[in-house]
Image (cartoon, rainbow, N blue to C red):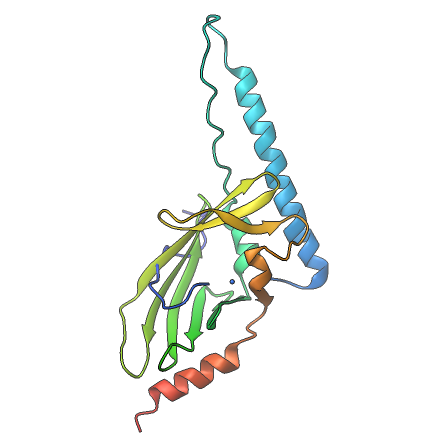
Length: 202
């Protein structure tokens, strides 16, 4: 329990999330090396386990499926904490204190979501948000994303059965989902504006 960071969550927001980043000097230190290190450790562990298995007979044996290697909670925290994930019609800010603020323009009116985010030791990042607009409000709901290290990059998918896609390479790739993240609360003004508009009773 001591190694977990945050709390598990899931959101049915009208949005689909995006990039976390610290200062430029830390970006390479906490981004590129992280992907390379995870990939290297996974290859070493897998090859070691395969070599240690005794061959009891010469009968053909099906190759074992390579297990997924998941980033730790600490490693995921470096990718999300104090960053804004930009979406097509909104954004979400992952606070250092685990608070989560999100907003979306919506089709007819803006909506805001408030709640918390968490990361787990099995490679998940979850969001728990309660959304509201002038016309509706929801109870807190959870949305989780799984992460794994594969072929020198971190992949992400929406749980429970989303398709895996590139999240972050050791060297930045324009196609990475993590490119949609910005350091800091860059959309705080838009969130505050939307919340005031929604909470205005007139």
